[in-house]
Length: 160
Image (tube, rainbow, N blue to C red):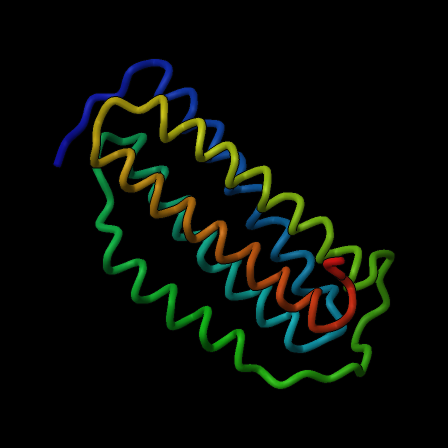
């Protein structure tokens, strides 16, 4: 389906595009620096989903609503694969950030990105565009949840 975006919608989508690009960059760098193989898998799975999000935003900017159901099934399989990876504490790389620092940073990033999707959703006039952005936002929340659960399981995030 072809859509026509207002200037405000286009600006908001351009912002989301830059957020997705930053997420891809962070997940790529952090996957290369993480010492725990389980964390590497989480970062790599989330990076793949962020690339899908970027592709969806680019489709929206070109005037086409992306097919979200196919992406959801593929992304769920990738996430489930990442979450079932066994853990190991053997360091594989020297880095200036440790795993906890990278997790804290990417969790903060996911919180911000999810919130910015909320604003974009409310500013879009087309229901299908809103639905596509809502779908992406839910996946962003799942990224944060995967990192949060990892942190909690490793004693990096304590809820009192």
